[in-house]
Amino acid sequence: MTQSPTRIETVMQTIQSRIASRTYPPGTRLPSVRAQAKALGFSVSTVVEAYERLAAENVIRARQGSGFYVCGPMPPLALSDIEPRADRAIDPLWVSRQALEAGPDTLKPGCGWLPDDWMYEAGMRRALRSLAQSRNARLVDYATPQGLPELRQLLARRMAALDIEAPPRQILLADSSTQAIDLICRLLLEPGDTVLVDDPCYFNFHALLRAHRATAIGIPMTPSGPDTAAFETALRQHKPRLYITNSGIHNPTGAILSPLTAHRLLKLADSAGLIIVEDDIFADFEIHPAPRLAAFDGLSNVIHIGSFSKTVSASLRCGYIAARADWIDQLTDLKIATAFGGGHLAAAAMLSALTDSGYRKHLEALRNRLAAAMETAVARLGRLGIVPWLVPQAGMFLWCQLPHGIDAAGIARACLEQDVVLAPGNVFSQSLSASGFLRFNVAQCGDERIFSVLSRTLSRAA
Image 1 (cartoon, rainbow, N blue to C red):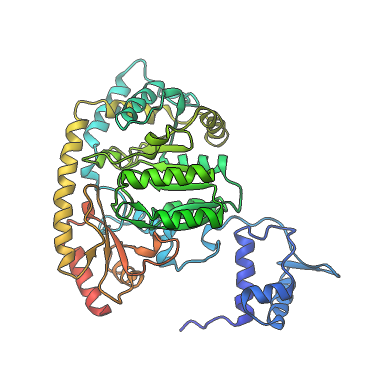
Image 2: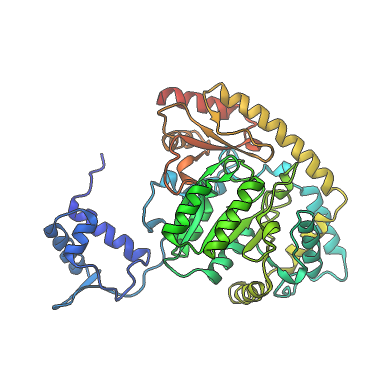
């Protein structure tokens, strides 16, 4: 049985964690023993002993009459050590690893992508064959910094269908929507800045913001978008720099932003000088397009991003950023600094796939398939007492509540031992208020073994 750490060890671990996560970089003067004792809720003598032990281990150094300072050199950045430290069962990085590293026999109802045979593999094969046979294809050269002009023109036309006016010069290609957010954070955030996110939200937003040393504040999600009263309160109390959200279909809840909520959000954001990052990665799943904040705002203070990893291919990475011209110029410089020219092949293949005559039929079939899978999953989960927060109009995610009193993290641990990867609710919740929820990917719920494992695990938990 694992022994709980003593109070002194707890203080030492807290300080070492902050050093590892760069909260306390080399040369930093630690809080005084009295201030640290008050902050951590321990006695002064406990903190004194912890400081002395860390000094003996050469982690920190005492300076006569001045206090204790962190020794160098700079340790590697450990995202999992950045406070607040989460149980690894509810850590977004750990959940991602479980899904990405899963073996062929592992079932993944908690992952965030479609099965391979649901993707546009036939169109990608045609695109790659065409590029391989073309004399004009650039198979070995860097792309231009802003990205393939023809793909940017196509993206401009696609966004125009959503009433977003984004000429090609205001579009920057990226490797993915994750890289897009990373570049935006590099441009607009300083360590310690506050960023609003939906609660719950896509869990990698948490990991990215943690990497940029930003403070995330969760805004409760409703079926029509974020709670505007809580949004207004957060603007007043925290003075955030950014708000990151999904447009269209929300991850993980499946909620859709209403026009009324969209207008209210933009009015509040404008009065506070807040910049909004709108991730539109699920656009092609929509049956009836939802309002886009970028359409109402005209790309003034809204940055619109997306990619095609959910509907075409996650292997050939290709995303984009649409923003006002001065930001695109600065983001292009950052892209060169961090990724140089980017890949031409992925953009050219994506252009070919998106303009292929079969893509529209692929999407129609995919939407129908998802609708059928959604209906089946709702029924199967309902028989286990697992109830959707709402039944989405489209998309692949179900945000579900477990029977009363059952902890999702415990269920996820037990199911993982039986080769079923789940996504427990607190992975998505900044406030850790979703311990009774799981996110299900209906496209990955076709195997009856998932429900057998869930049934047995829930019975034991109850």
